[in-house]
Length: 351
Image (cartoon, rainbow, N blue to C red):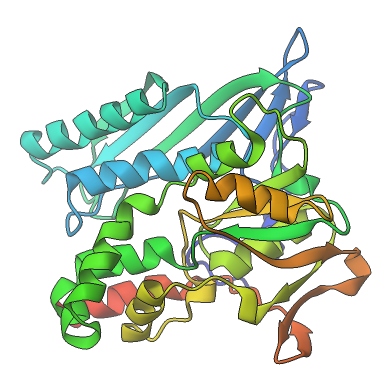
């Protein structure tokens, strides 16, 4: 029995979606797969087109600017895993009738602004107001980019013995959104400074700069094999997905996972383990054996923290987490605990 809550898991995808994805065209180089961020279609002249889709956020407790940021940059994070920025965007807006024209104007103005900053053209979509739409999801979008075929990366391209790097910290977006949505609670339980710092980290939830620094603006570096951005399931979930997509195992050292004090303290307020919480802003990077120090140095020049946390192994090894010198099977949480924490706090009247 599948538990239908949050992003679908591996077994749901394999059981109900894989093998039923319409007609298979010859030019489809990479179709839907668990753990992948993008699809790839081959074009003429040795070019390929990458596409990615995601829900759009509309969270009144955050505000229109912050919602627009999430709507744009969570999709951009997926495209960033190819080593390229998005070029084109389609948006489908299913908006609540209660949304005022002033709020829509603000929301859309910021979406436009953030797309301009990435040099992304908005090419179309659909906009409508839907009776009964009260979700924090306001529709969906698709980002598209075109790049040389032999330069596009996908998350299933990691290789045995590749080193695993994590940028920034675990639970960046979880801590930021919780601190902004329940500021008084976080101030009371973790302190004003932690609440302020967590709120400020909201605009660190883009990992586009991380990816471009890793591969180079001109794709001049070839030591990066694959990348995967961190969303539901957190850093550990993203590594598990990347290993599964690449048909590999992995060994991750728990004590090496980067958990900044701000994220750790905010997660503690909501009884969350930051390793498993939505962590937009962090990027998982697989790089060739012996090259991690070089990649870390490149990112450091852009003021982006990056930490080696493990390595990919043959599939038979399994996906293991090493805790206090004990190797255990890494758990994969099909439902991110962030969602329950957020709505429990909301329903409990936390401010």
